[in-house]
Length: 413
Image (cartoon, rainbow, N blue to C red):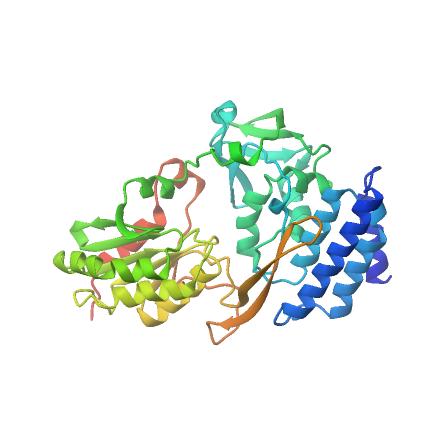
């Protein structure tokens, strides 16, 4: 059976009983054709993972069933269309339009969806596991949502993105996971007992107030400001180790402007080791990251043979993944942690577009970068270590501990 026909059947099966008005139909039709044109015109190589006719057939299937689709279903299909390019920088962004969230922050760990943050109403559930949403088990939810996830390069970023995007109520409703766009029945495993509760959505402002209980967030609170917003430092005097929590990217000028002061401080302390933590760093400008490494290279006290470590995980993406690969090369850094969510050979440098009528946002990639000679799906650590759920509950950062342990080892030769 032809792929296009199968896609039409799938779209029809997802359709709700209500659809778009005449004007909305015309507007969305123009928006979809605009998106199709921009992908073909501006992406460096949009069809590296699928034939162009498959992409066009997907567009035609959406257009053919537009009268039977609700607005959120149109959006979900555009998410899936852009995800089919298989490029984590070419995406449709559902949060560029009206959206609401379920009131939790999650960690998706070893196939389990753990609650690591919640509104005050659900604080008692922090640390517990969600085992079903509207009767669908979490493995089923992940499988159904995965083709729609945006910002995905590989299976590691898919898991990382799922933990956040599963909170998007309109997306879960549009793809048929939930029965309502404003509430769902969540089933929790609370201390070994199943407990179900209807959960209502909240707006983005309230969602942004939720704080995570993950250990790395707590470490940031005690870090030192070094004049580079997004990069904070802690110092381990016993091992003369400077630990940089590289969470987000400062500007190039902020790095250059603060470099001299930082080098003087680290030289005065006779710094021997550097730990650069790129875990959960979603990217920015890797040229700024290169400026940071150039700054650190002025340290004559560092053991450049085995004194530099970079921490990575599934949240290390885009420029952060690029910088991890570069630091491995130019700083002789040892990578510790778990595989990156970013592919080291990837399409990037996204161009942002706004759909003319709906004003939703999407992006396409205009560059290609190859940071490793042998193609692979992720940047893999030399020393693999990942936190267990018990490590997280015990506020124990086993990845950072492994790095400190590594730096304390004196080579036998």
